[in-house]
Structures are given as C-alpha cells and as structure tokens.
Amino acid sequence: MTYNDLIPELGVLDIEASLRFYTQTLPFKIEYQRQDVGFAFLSLGNSQLMLEQVSATDAATDEELRAGAWRTGALEYPLGRGMNLEIRVESLDQILLALANANYPLKMQPREAWYRRETILIGQRQILVMDPDGYLLRFHEVLGERPAD
Image (cartoon, rainbow, N blue to C red; front, side, top):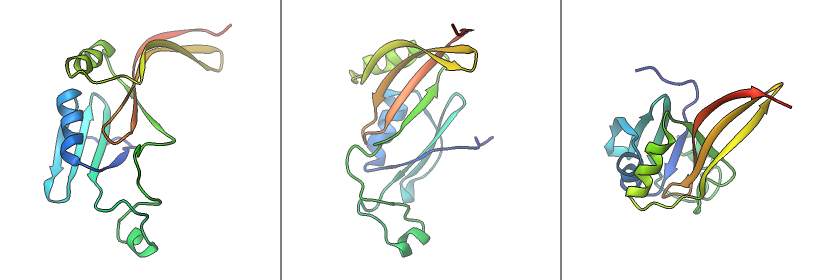
C-alpha cells in the first residue's frame, strides 16, 4: 500500500457510527483497523482518511499532548469547524446515489464551480455533505480546464 503525503486523521465520537457512514452510506473501503483503540484507515480512490475514536472531549494537558492525546481544545459538535475535506471522485453521481439511497441530507446541492489558477479556470461539479461528527466533506468530479477571461 502506498500512503499519501498528507492523510487527515479525524477524531470521532462514535467510531462505529462513523464507519457505517463512510463504508455503508459512502463507498469508502477499510484498508485496516485497530479495533482495540477504535482506529480505522480508509480509502476512496486516491483519497485516504484515518478515523480515531476520541477517549475524552476536553482539551488535553501538555503532558497528555506529549503522550499522544492531540486535542488542542474542547471537542464539541460540529467537530469539523473551520475546515472542509475536498475529495475528488471519478463519478459524483455514484456518491449522490449512495447518499440518496441512505436518505442522507446534502449541505449543498450539486453545483458547477470554476476556480482560477493563473490564466486558466479549473472546473468541477461538487456537493457538500456533513459526516456524523460534523466534518464537512466536499466531493467533486473534474470538469476540465478553460482559459480565464
């Protein structure tokens, strides 16, 4: 297995609920787990994500941080405040169908967006969905490039 250079690790309140969402509602695959500590390594296409059950929701002390309890502040829902995870997929329709089949709500309906990169625009069709812990996921499929005006 090849690991990406950047792999987000999300602290979750209920690992079983998170795994149901990511692997039953969405088509993520469990690459491996450490069930004794509530950890799972997931993948979807070229995207990788780690989930870990948090053992406490208060901010960690300096000693706890050094020991591996990486809670820099109190954990309150929604846990994903201030960030979203952009996940490129081959088919956004596959994700939409999976969410619709599970009756799972979207935070943003499918829309086309074009983002400037120097002299070109990069297009994508995208949606937003919030996972059970409040992490915002932005799934998108590539539409291509065109010259910027």
